[in-house]
Image (cartoon, rainbow, N blue to C red):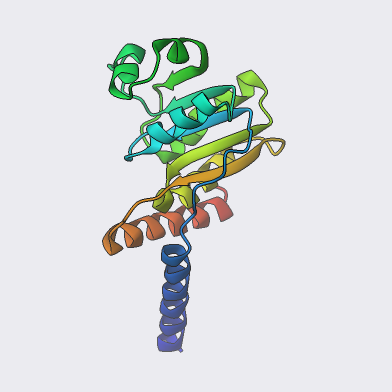
Length: 176
């Protein structure tokens, strides 16, 4: 009986992992949203957000998880973006230190602005867990669209992220 339970659990984990690894979220088209939220921590995320903001895909952008020592002018120079874009349209979120606090910081930022639709930008392997955290923190009236930055994650990275995702889903089910 125990062996059967372990076998079924392992098979379920393997099938779920195959789904997780093979069907990674993809980039989104340039559709309009009220805001863009970029989670720091991966290559191409801020570049993607800035490109969309310049194209007019959103009015404002939050970059969540920015180190307290980073200044807008430094980011503008690093990403070759006009400083006026940072002054008018970009908020640097400095409170988040992990995915869960990214979601809390984002929810507070969105509540103050009463936005209805937000585009979440993060790396493809990170999108499902980030979206799960953000959905838990956001009010139901906010539409969340996923815009994944493609990457080439290792099998180890995918397995680690999948396990984190499963743990957060389990925690959400029991109310944590």
